[in-house]
Image (cartoon, rainbow, N blue to C red; front, side, top):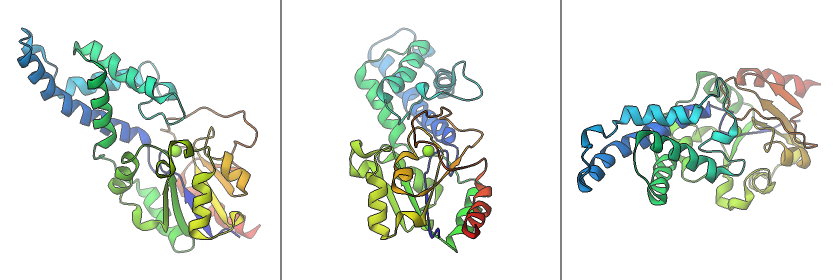
Length: 263
Ligand SMILES: [Mg+2]
């Protein structure tokens, strides 16, 4: 019988693209005045052509989404956590700065990445997620397990105001970079902390490439949510990577759990 539900965060409880948008807006707000100061200090004649925040944001967004509607492949992601992230992230910023005629070096790029990862996100929890978390918390123990850079993940949890729903939150980054999914370490820590058996846990997440490998192996029930605005759209050919059940909306989750509980 399922007694515990462990949720993934990004593109499971909210649309991660909203976070990306918020991050690029923060970077634009940071860069616009900085660029004016830099042009002043270096005596550049084209001071008046320093890009405004709105233009910087538009350019970053364009690079981020370039030619890829309506769904963005992971290779252009700023926060691509599936590997090879640094190059892709750098590329988005580099390409936008080239376009804006803003001179840069590695130090500036690193600074922009830092602004992105440490910004206070303007994101809200969708109503259907709020309803489901509230409904399920009456009947189940809820937990959250999330990959990604600290403090970015912690700031997302704060901004969404979801901490209160979870008995346990595992930030895999706190265990070490080697323990991001698909490592089982985060899930093992969860089992230990909650002191529950794997077969009593349902894991709900979005990314087939990394989210279900360890939970499947450990014997959790696995459910994939496919949100329409999701960022990661690729599927995995690896055996044991697919979830056992698939839903399209989080509002389908309570009924599915109910059904599985009575089968
Ligand atoms: Mg996710």
